[in-house]
Image (tube, rainbow, N blue to C red; front, side, top):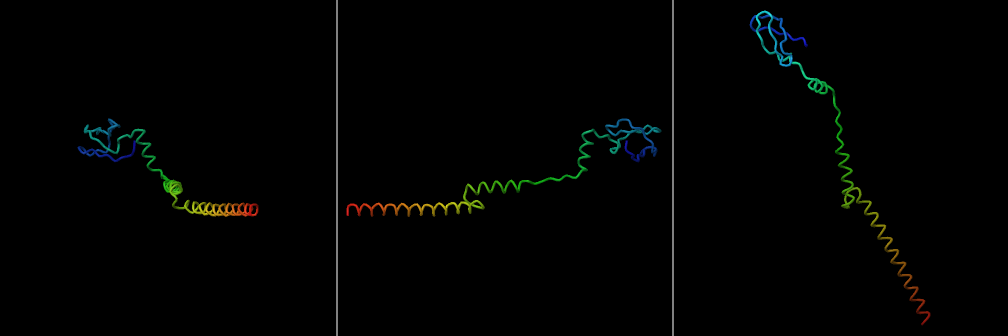
Length: 122
């Protein structure tokens, strides 16, 4: 039982006897006055546990920013915007240059074929 100063409102005695610890009910041994002292109410094990947990500091990590950044990278990569967009531009530029080289090679091949045909039938 916690040490609580309890005074009987009827006779002024500071002595008391606990009648019901769950309700915090006490009785004066001299005048038999009964009353409730909230400070004497016994807590259940769950209440004690929750009270102890509330006293301990908690570190709550917010991982939403990291997750949001990763999600935005994925979405922007699909949409062609953001950090992944520059990679898309590089890839498109390489494809365009490769396409131009292929077109020039095909043109050279066609010119050589027509030149050879002209020399053959010319």
